[in-house]
Length: 102
Image (cartoon, rainbow, N blue to C red; front, top):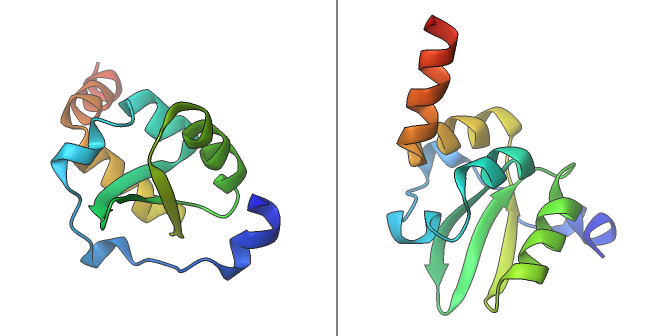
């Protein structure tokens, strides 16, 4: 369904989005990076997750298998999602900076 529904999902500009700290605990940093997906917020009992159109099938399968929450996917630009992942998972950003510098 993800491939068929992807073009009909809402798009998101992450530059104007606030990421709730409490929802980032629902996805480990390594998985966020692998899936290019970022939980944004809980909205009326469902989890809103940003991902790319290309990664939507993987992200949908991941959350379907591991979460009891209803997940609403929104489609974002890969660069913005990657930047938001680095900001939302500070330990990941620090490790990445150290590996580049070291």
